[in-house]
Image 1 (cartoon, one colour):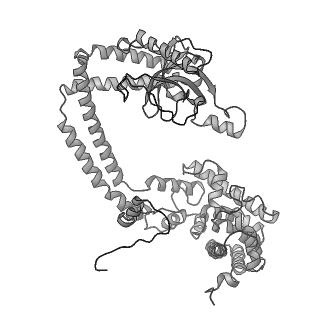
Image 2 (spheres, one colour):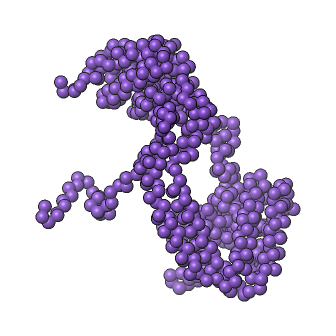
Image 3 (cartoon, one colour):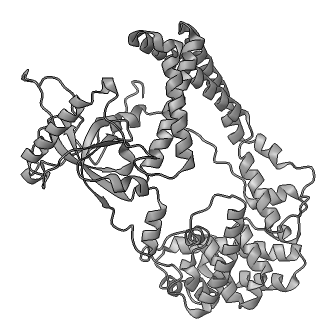
Amino acid sequence: DDRGIVIQMMDEKMEPAVCKGILYGDPDPLNSSYHISYNMLLNMMRVEEVDPEFLIRASFHQYQQESESPGFDAQAEEYEEKAKEVKVDDEEVVGEYFTMKKQLKKIRWEITEVVREPQNIVPFLQPGRLIKVTQADGTSWGWAAVVTHRKKPGMEGGGESARLARKSDIDPYTIDVVVRCDPVKDGGVDDGLKWKANEESRPFVAGQTEEGEKKKPDHRIMTIPLNTVVEISAVKIVMPADSHPKQARNSIGKSLREVNKAFPEAKGGLPLLDPVNDMKIRDDKIKTNIDRVEALTRELKAHKIAKFSPEDRAARLAKYEEKNLLVESARLMRKESAKAQQMVMKDELRRMKRVLKFMSHVDASGVIQLKGRTACEINTANELIVTELTFGGAFAEFTVEQTVALLSCFTFDEKSRDTEGEDPAAGLRPVLAEPFKKLSQAARIVYNAYKECNIEVPETFEEFLGTVANPGLMEAVYAWCKGAKFVDVQKLTDTYEGTTIRTLRRLEELVRQLASASSAVGNTEMRQIFEKGSELIKRDIVFCASLYL
């Protein structure tokens, strides 16, 4: 209208931000979902003048990627200009010292990772042992006293779940430690849980309370994984029999304060367990790393920068780190810009060609073979699995009705509402279970080929099979091919009528494609089977021009 008034009518409550987003929000970005299928690749390879790489370079996907390159270059130039503005006195000397410190930190971290492996660290996690705790987000709790440690449940045993748990990156042990927390108001927390650190707990920072009084730390027990232990001390304190009461935790806190006073950070801090002499770790790499740490430490002490005052040294290193970060950011932007100029899906295309050679669809020179000519005709289903079924003789073993029912696994792509999470082939009759078994065997051949050629696939074959085939409509399609009425067919499935019709129409298209593929390779017998299958499918209300007629 003339005023541009917009009226929103809603039948439920909506947050103001959501409402505003509907009115003023930006449109969804138009991103290309272009991808290459094996059918497309084979059809391009069979034509001598057509280059798959040229087609990819001419795609909208490639254009979108290349359009990002100027933005990366502009960002890189901005970082480079900022880096030039940062002036560092004796930059070369400071850079050398900075690099040595960075290398020293990296080597120490490698030693820490070996030290905290369960077989190395667990024997030394006795009650009272002091360990330094730093969380993954960088939150440091400082020195904490070990209360106990335990192995996570489910890590033992020979079952599949235990094997997967041991294989995962999850720490097999947890440690209960007493830490110094900032005082927090427990609110409604049960008195019996006030000993436990919660999500509101933060490391203690000296200062004053809101009332102007000196803050006192709140000592609590926190459960941590092994990967948060960054240092293990040679010092052990005496622990009470039960660490949960407040008096016991305060006693542990008092011992922590006394130990920190006895070994101040300015004089080197608490003595650590030696990985080789104390922990008896037999690892040639850790011995080499310890020697490198000692050598680097000596070089840093003798370095020219080490003679500067701590304040001057810290200021120069901070300036150099700032500049180094800008230079590194510019380098990464340049790298991203160069990456944006490269052809999209280049590695994917190379691996797909390897799969085609591995499965004999093309020869070593890239010439299409008989299997490849068959796959060229199929684009309604997984062409590689269907081709394996064809050349494995599966379709010749079964009746036309069984063959068509088997092919429905490729065109039905909806999860059953009643059997979600169950084995979809569990309730199949023997007349249909045997064809599906053949499909599984062909799918396993393709799955192994994918893995051999580094194609990204689900971790287990069962997951892969679930993504490429669904036997949920096999019974219904078998009955349809036997001449059953549509209303009776619907009783055999829990899908909607529209889903059944759509699946049957796609199935008829797949069967026609297989008939065409059989003609292309000169297999008249198979062509007749598929043509007969098409006749069995194409009847009644499913293929009416309009449901209103």
